[in-house]
Amino acid sequence: MKQFHWIQNDITINFPIPKFLQDLLLEAEELDLNNSPEYHCVADTIDVIGKNLYTGHVITKQHRICYS
Image (cartoon, rainbow, N blue to C red):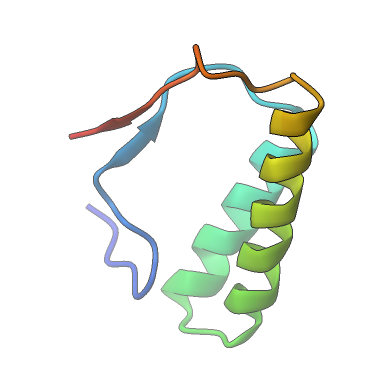
């Protein structure tokens, strides 16, 4: 199991997300593993994009994030 500094390891996204968001999540993981302060900028970007996808009905209430 990867040892992240800020990312919660017990969360699984079990629904399709756009490729660009997948790429951002992978970038965030790498930055987190390297303990890079740039992680926080990418995390903020992911937050804004997620909210935009929700308000644009690309991600809906039917999509659930699973906690293991």
